[in-house]
Image 1: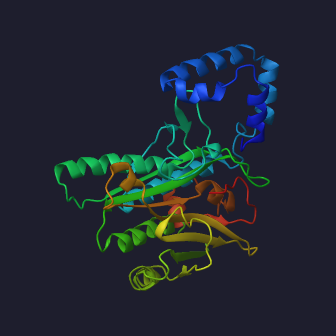
Image 2: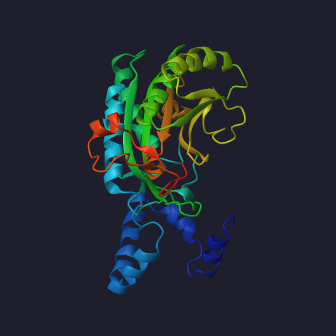
Length: 339
């Protein structure tokens, strides 16, 4: 077995062929019924004292260290930005179908918290938005097989990831996710890149030293278009932001196609913190079985952002105040996430 722990369980278990039977012989509904019975019995054995110990030590259950009011105000600001830029805001469910992260996004299921009801806890809000984009694009294509109407969706959501992170980093955190879906056409890539970056910069407006780096994942074929129709468009609109190419980028290759971007902010102490990331994927094309479908996804770590910020004045509580007198960067990075 590739997993030595699983191999030990199967070798020492009293039921030979147990894994194959669970995977291949039981229907999803029957497996769900079985697992519900297993955990119902295990839950019946939990004592109040044991429950408290588990809550204290389980890394998945600790509350976020960021201030809940600050995070709520930042979330409201993010949704105001979505509306301002023509994105439809959603309030996604906390769970999604089993395989949402692994079937189209090629993320290992081991990095996802799977439930007993053939679902998984949302680990990336853009995966869920992609499903909703696919449904809405399917409806458009049924009405017009050559529909060029774009679907723009956004959401903020607390996500949960199973892989261990670095010291002081939580397995659950809040993200702002964006997805734009549409038909492959000459202007789709450059226009949607500009749109996504401008939403994120709106959220980050007044924050300080922000840099957006673009990466051409086609071996240079799109570099000229990215420079002339993305960087040269964004730079005059946002003179306070640094724009450039990130040719050394390693992450996301094989995950994104065509082009990708990252958003970094530099704290007053000189620490460079990655807050945003995005790129083109083949997800809606795969979901709809239509290679002409295009999808741009991007995310902003609003919990990490909240951990980097401190209120610029006491008693600030409204989003209007946030826009007029923005939060300022703090050197204390707490409650961050690895997205």
